[in-house]
Image (cartoon, rainbow, N blue to C red):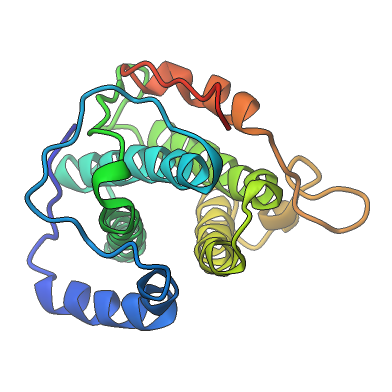
Length: 222
């Protein structure tokens, strides 16, 4: 996995982290699953069962997105504008914060660091990068939508709802970068006839993400 690079934007990230933890950190604090620093995690990627399994599922997806956007900013595509750099930097920071938050919340129950595979992505080509970003963001939104019903604790559902709302903002922004000022931000491929976001099961999401993740992931207890 590529290392994260905040590009000299430490103060921005710190402010974002404070806002993020103020919004959802308290939900996990009251559940008693505080950060578990210094504990090595197993390399196996068995998500586990129940709510822990669902949180690990989300953590796996956030690892993928954080790694992708970190690479995008490390090797910017040709002719990336300042505006696009700012947008993609903000999205990267959000995904890194989501990933770190879930990892710390899971503590010793967290799966290990996943190995990613971005061989199919041409990071020097704008279309390749943004098309992949759209795939990841749309997949993430549908994943949270589909997994919500599997959560038992209301506080977990609250936290997941706050994350998915940010992911949906990302998805709309990426779609607007690809096709500005169009209705594609809420196209029929992601919104159903009732005006609701589409949902995918964990099995469908992991199958779609499989080409980008080298580490085998098992979810037989979700």
